[in-house]
Length: 250
Image (cartoon, rainbow, N blue to C red; front, side, top):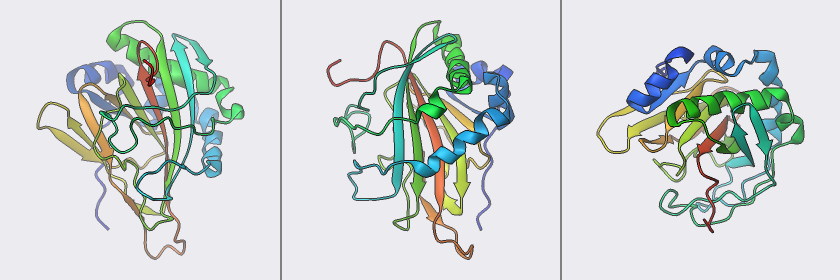
């Protein structure tokens, strides 16, 4: 098997500086717990909910490899408020494959988003955003993704290398089971520099300045010889945007 490249880890205390200087950073699970004031027992129970995600009915490449839920929140310091359920929308300029389409996904389960640990997670990451761009409300979209190998191959980013049209993006690895591939790639949006690595430990977190970098994850395939043909890669993707949600009427 090809050796997986480990991500460069940034300590929580150096996170803001790393994002300012290079536009991306990776927190180890322990770093995420420290940043958000969490313990592993606070968030480990969430992982089971990824096994009950509805199918994504909007894939335009004809695939059946993606399941997801989506909910939206406003984060203002320690105050985290879920907003009425709304469609996920991106302009074509940011998502050539699925842009311009109002996509209505099932919301995240109340049992998860009502927990204090969920609010602490969003508030902790929102604090990083405010440290970089000033205290303000952050409009957060939360996406639970499961990419599986039902089709023999699963595509975490079928749109290719992209930006999301927000200020900051956090990608939290939740699980990686019986797959190869799924390499993360981060590139300067306006330069030649790039970085590649594979997230393997649950709750490792990639943070991105969406104005400065583009990102993608390579396709996954099932590992051979494991006695189980199904594989999956689970992530929680959180986008933080100032001045409101992306909306077709904005």
